Length: 334
Length: 159
Image (cartoon, rainbow over all chains, first blue to last red; front, top):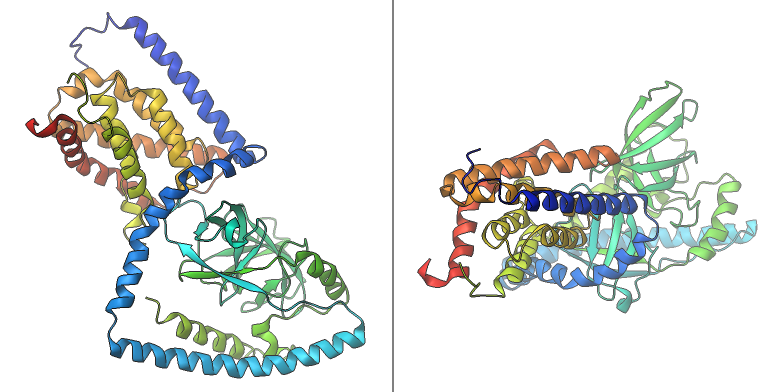
């Protein structure tokens, strides 16, 4: 390094500068550690997110305008095609719904016979996603709905496919969703087929979840659908979480580790559904159901419920039906 | 170089940098997103050392951490490290031609990635995919345009 102005003059400044650097570094590291541990910093963080809320709003504006322009510019033919697709989707949903209603009535009757607690109906609220790119190592979403719209911390977030995540932060106009694929996230689940209770962990990738510590004897198979168990009281029972894609022995060779494909479309879509918190009534109902050994059945899996021990070729059929109807519903969006 | 003509340019440039960082990009382009805020902070550290120093870099880093929803303090740490190195070599950097300056900034941006990776490694947080290491290259290429643009706004038309 050639010394132009002579490094001798600002010697004192150098030392002061280094000291200040050290002070700031120490402060930053303290913040990082405190934030990593969670705790009281979360409170301050929630408050100060109000500060950046307008930034999110402005950054989301191009996407909103783009959507609007696309909506306005779509031709009659496009609209007609979209209408056709939606009509088909509605027909399929209607057919499935009528089947479900019969099943729900039967379920209610059987539940009455068992004397078990009632599981409340689905009470949801639609919330648009605010389209901004957050830190790519974290799996979060910002919703364009906040405490003003009745959103609360702890609400479960779903989409047409299944469970997306939960609300972890709320400001007046926005809410932060922690996705189930975030590495900090874990969700208690059961295998829909046989009721084995497990925990699904996020891996930081939007197309993968991990089932850790599966006992070797537990009869979990590739292709099994995994639903929330409702244990812990945070998530209501019976929402699809994912499908088992692969199973390997873990390092200790005493357990299996499974890779899941999430049921929800975590990186697509413009809107999500927020479940109204009825956690207390459900939390009371779920231990009873899981204690009796009847796994809660997801709405999508109901048609296959009568033959849980059916052979493997027939089991993928309902899931495939579900998989084909979802793109049909999503198709008009892009 | 006496007084800044436009006192609003500093906050405005930071806001624009934050917005560019939040702007949704297609999945393919996301790894290439340059670290706009670092470019802007680097410009101000080099050109306006009286007003902008480590404290400014720290505050902007905190703001960015809040905006991007990352670990609070991570970007503050990264920007403070960068601002410190820039301050040390400011005398030399100012007399570099723009191309050499861009090379130096590119080096700093790579260093920034290393610092970020080190923080994530220490805490056991997930690392960014490897494709994100291309971003410093793009940042380096953008240094010239950003520098000239900000200079034009700051000094008025006489450039």
